[in-house]
Picture 1: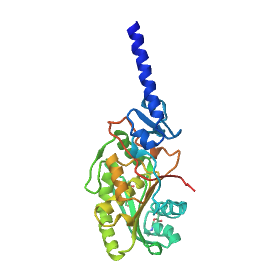
Picture 2: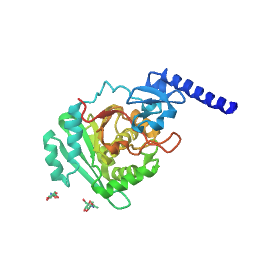
Picture 3: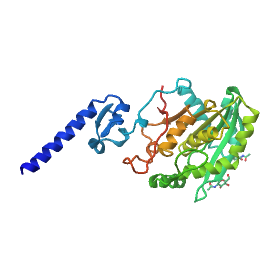
Picture 4: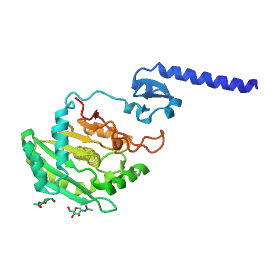
Length: 299
Ligand SMILES: *[C@@H]1O[C@H](CO)[C@@H](O)[C@H](O)[C@H]1NC(C)=O
Ligand SMILES: *[C@@H]1O[C@H](CO)[C@@H](O)[C@H](O)[C@H]1NC(C)=O
């Protein structure tokens, strides 16, 4: 009896000492570097890990990488770039053909270059992208279409929920198979060679990559592939995605930040897609968002 009481008292004492220890950490980095603690993003508090299961997992930060850091000063996110460029070019990706895409590009005086529509999964559903040349702002713009129709959405979601992923020589780290399979096919279907041709022709132009949902993940991969293959220097690439799902492993996320420092993911607070695949316990297969996250549409 006395022994049992002693064990319980000791357990309570240890938990409290631990909890106290977490509360001493005020920064997210310090907190997540301390064993047994997690950072509660909603409350800006450092808490004992035993409380993590009782906290909305969207707010649980448990590794230093996921702590928010300031945006790059050389390319701060602006509402105008998100709304008038990333959003506009992404909307144009729904055009069925050159005529329809061109109608959308008139607003920015960008020139349609080529469209790529190919079967990209085991149900032979299409993935699509197009390239435009934007002389006013000296950029080559590569935009990927989002998932089209509920069958494609569920095929994609099935992959995310089973965490199936693999490596590819085009990028670093593991990437969800739906995204990397589609990306490798599109890249080989003319995007790579056309970018090389355009880069030779417009050597001082930047590369912008845009996309929504599935298109966001593909745009993220394209920005990395363009730098990893040495086609573009990292300062020449800007990537802005909307509603992008978690695309790959922690290694992919960290490498993305190095290859593409000017990269933003626009997130709508209630958009479930951006929370997929859900984070699970450390040590299990996991998925990470790369930098930088901005809210839709932040002023
Ligand atoms: C482009 O697609 C639209 C809608 O499907 C169609 O009406 C139009 O004829 C197409 N134009 C060309 C040039 O194929
Ligand atoms: C895929 O795209 C091709 C060419 O644009 C089209 O003919 C075909 O119907 C599309 N397939 C699906 C499943 O939408």
